[in-house]
Length: 489
Image (cartoon, rainbow, N blue to C red; front, top):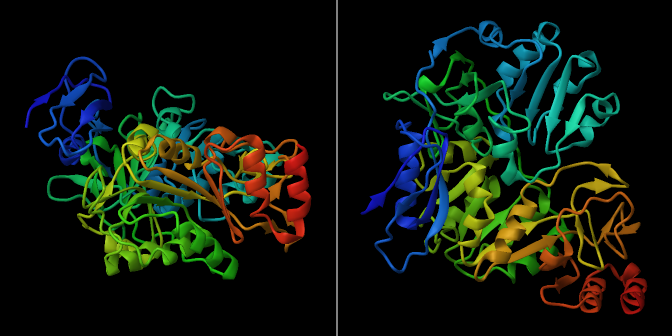
């Protein structure tokens, strides 16, 4: 293997034209904290020894320095390192360090005005309670209706960015660079490396560049592999707090979701690499893929993938990147999934500048992205964020994966949604998006839209053609009027 490199003292070195067989090994060098040398962010290239492997792009991380104390502390003393007015980044989803966060809120009076930052949360946003008004703000790219009251009083900052950009915006040098990062880790191994477990996406690169890193070490956190590690010398202090991880249990699946999933499954070929989100439709989709062969997984690992792994339907054997392994930024599920992921070599954790990079996704070949929406208009514009002009969620990774699929040979992006909302009173296929609606996926990237009534293929269609295709997958109660609009608009 021939490697030519000049690796800088920054935190990420772009890898140009990497052979997929070797990318993991190089990324793990970064995870093990090798010191880097002179110039920042220089390109490293690898001569591809196998002409049958498709080159891709990824990132290797190198810490700026290896000089932190890794001092053991009580919860109170660990949080005591924070200062008033700081911006503090939290992990997402099932990686929530609940013991550390509870202590932060106990010290909220001392820390005010404090800004917490992070993505999707599974709790009730305790820092958004009225008792913390004016003391704790929350900056996020993933909104929630549970933040409505705090937003009304001015304690929420929504940052409308796609997931791929979080590693830059919410890291050193970004607009929301954190003063401190809280991480939730497995215990260190004999060499001193701690795995960030179920949540790596935006947190890992931020932690490797933050002025202060505080770790909650939890024996219940699975030790995931790949680009998931901090060395003890990259952590200022740690506190031991054992508790079950926050869980994301399976959601109920009804006949509508199963009908949608059946149409989606027809668009997924054997050997495809799939990306799905969370919720009842993605869960139904995974159930509908049970008869497929040699599927791969990219981005998110959830409970409803395990039956397909156990049956062999998911084996990652045809993936062009990290063949035999799934590339995951977040794991969201239950204790059963966490146990399965522990020390599992088929799970390769990667941060969002790999997992959500459209250039990386574009190299995956038969890549199929499945995401949902709140409404789609007859132009093919997709709103997955707002209702009646009110922001209720975020862009997430939808745009990243839709764009990546458009660049992939054999790529397909699917927007899957029920045809109606509000107990059948409104159509979710609409003539035009209403005033104030957010456009998550623009019409020029819309590919397939699926409802329980069928599939609309929009790629390459004229405005009139896509309008008719969308009207035909609307609910029958609204279909005729939409077809008239499609003809006359």
